[in-house]
Image (cartoon, rainbow, N blue to C red):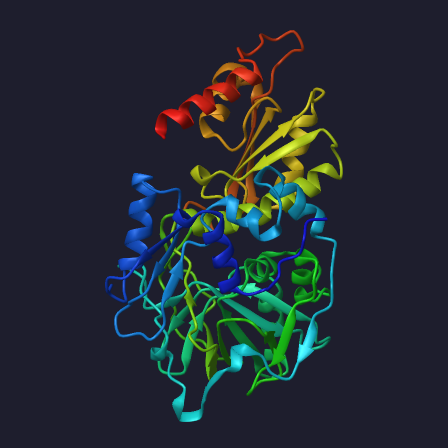
Length: 461
C-alpha cells in the first residue's frame, strides 16, 4: 500500500506540490478584487493552456487578511499525489480504497481553533468569500464541506454544498443532491429540530475526497478519510455545536440548519456551463468562526471549470468502474469527459466484449448514475480520456442504424437545463469493433516513442 501522508492538512499538501514542481503553484503578489478576478484568471489559463492548470495562490485579495488558494483540484495528477499513487493508477486505487475505513482520533482542541470568533464577533465578511460569475445571486462559498450527524444514529456525514452569503451570520444553501444531509434535514424538521453543522473550508485533499464519497448512510465519512489516507484523521470538538472537525483544517464555520425556514438562494453558476435557478432554499445560521493562525482560504473555481468538473468526474469514475467490474471483469477504463460536463456523458472501455455486453454495461452505468445521458462503449485500444480518440472510434467502428439505442422518458439530473421536469432520454453508442477480423490500427514501436519523447525533451532544453 502507498505510504500515508505525513500531515493531513492543506498547507502540507501544497508544500508537497511545490516540491514536486515549483511551476505547479502560480503565486500572485499583486492585489486583486474580491469578486471575479480569481475565477477570471483560472478560466483564462484554461483557454490559453499556458500552464498545465496550476494551483493559483493569491496573496493580496481586496482587504482580506487571508490569502486565497484555488484550482487545487484541476488536474488528475494532484488527485493521484494526494493518494500517493501514479496517475494511471488513480481510478483503480480510489475504487479499491472505497471499502477501507479507519476511525478518527478525537482531541479536545486543534490548530483549527487557534482563533475563535463567537457571539457579536461573528461576521462572514471577515472571510474573502467571493462572487464568481456575473449572474450569481451573491458571494458564494464553493469549497465548503458540511459536517453533520444523522439525527437518529449520530453517524457523521461530510458533503459539498454551495453556500450564499445572506448576512453577517446567515448563509443560504441548496441540498439539491437529495442525499444524506437532505434526508437528515427532512427528518429533523419533522421533529422541529435544528441540525447542528460545521462547515470546513480548507483541508488536505483526502478530507475533500471523503466529502465526495458516496456510500451507505451508516458509514462515518471521517473513517472513509482515514481509509483513503491509511492513517487516522485527527479531529477536535467545535466550540458552539456538538460536531467534530478536522483538527488541522484551515477555517471552520459552526452553526445550524434552521428547521422549516426557506429563503431565496441563487442563481449559481453550475458545472453545466449555465446558471442554476433551482434550490431547496435552506438557511444556515452561523454561531462561530474558527481558524488556524495565518489561515488559507481555499476556493473552488466554479462553473464549468477544470477544477469543478474534475471534482465530479474522478470519484464518479471510481464508483462506476467498481460497479461495472462487479459484472464484467473485462471493463478496463471509465471516463467522464469534460465535454459532457464530467456528469452527463461516460465512456467505457472493454477488452474483447462479446456481442451484447456493450449494451448491458451501458445499462449498469445508467442504473448507477441517474445523471448520465450518454454512454459510449469502446474497445480497450481507445484512450477514454481523449475525446479525439473516442470520436475516431465512433467514426470508424459505429453504424448509426445498428449501434445506437435510445431510452426515452427516464429520470435524469435535475440540474440538466434540457430536462423535462426531471425526465430525460438516455443514449447508448456502441463504438467497439463490429467483428474479430476488423482492420488493425497503425502503431509505432514503444522504444521509438520513448526515443521521440527524449529527443523532444532535449530539443526544448
